[in-house]
Amino acid sequence: MKIPTPRQLPSGHWFIRLRLGGESIPITTATRSECVQTAQIYKAEYLAGREIQKRKLPPAPDLTLRELLTAYIDKYRPVWSPVTVRGYCTIRDNRFAGVMDTKLRDIRDWQRVINAETKVCGPKSVKNAWSLVHAALADAKQPAPTVTLPKSTSKPRPFLTADEIRRFVAAAHGSKYEIPLLLGLHGLRRSEIAAVTWDRVDLKKGVIHVEGAVVPDENSRYVYKQTNKNEASRRPVPIMIPELLDALKAVPKAQRSGPVVTCHIGTIYKAANAICEREGLPMIGAHGLRHSFASLGHFCGVPEAEMQILGGWKDAGTMRKIYQHIEDEGLLRAQNAMARFFTSPESDDHKNGNENKDA
Image (cartoon, rainbow, N blue to C red; front, side, top):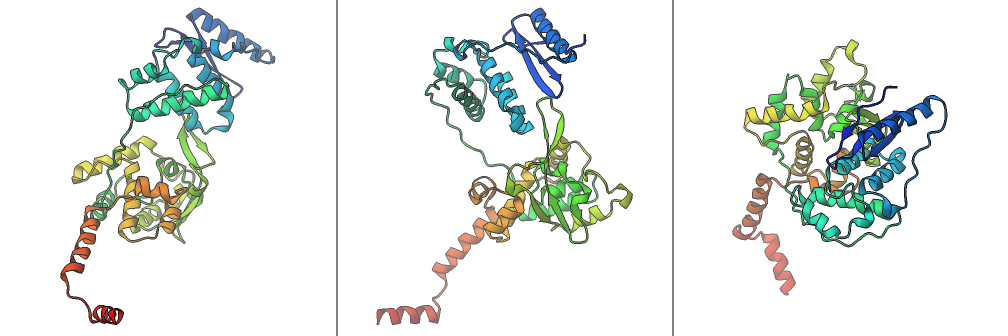
């Protein structure tokens, strides 16, 4: 009976992930032979048409941390996004390695666990990992200990200024990846770029209807999901860069079916940085194109409400906090404007206004 090859975890335990009838069944045991045997039993039951009799989990305190997280992930797998499941599985398989296969009742000093993890990864990774553990403990009705997490300082993501965007567009013109790069400069996320299909592109009206996303699942396979990151992400995006409209129109009509962008999602990151390196621009990657789009909107004076719709942000606060960068050029204009206020003579209207007020 063919089953996946078991792999040994850093803890020494053995792991197999079965897929039976569209259901993911993780198996973790102390020995390789037990792991193989359990997988064979599960598959035999499935092939015989019987309901798979999974091993009943022991009481929560007797679970290992890995078993707790696996049970939590499997419980909500049907309602979570594939990318969420992937992220949680990555945390389970890579974080807190020192205690991942320790029973919960034997983990007595969680602060020491946190402190140890800060030595091998950044504050944000520690915070995300602890959030998962905290949620899984709460779901299992186990008391969540109070811990102090490392403080993180967010570094601003590189972006292109208005003049740099013009140089980037010119450099991308006619290249193999012009379309995905210019879609990024229209504020589309990588997952949205990969999900754009020709039936959602209206070349006559110059509009792209953004719906759905392509994301990696826990097995690193890219899958399409109908929902976007949030409801606001489903939006019509006007084609504002003439070079993008020209590039889309240049695609032969016979080829205008299915996905607009057929390259691997990761290629967009490499293509963007290749142009930046060649042109002496900041290395922005793929998501930096979205940041540049938001910054350009700020530079052009586009009201926040309109920018929020164009970029598909859930709320203006998120857009301001993460994406809107004030360029040095814009800051210099503001500085000069204030300097002119103090150095230029007052207007007659201003003087008259003050005189009337004193009277």
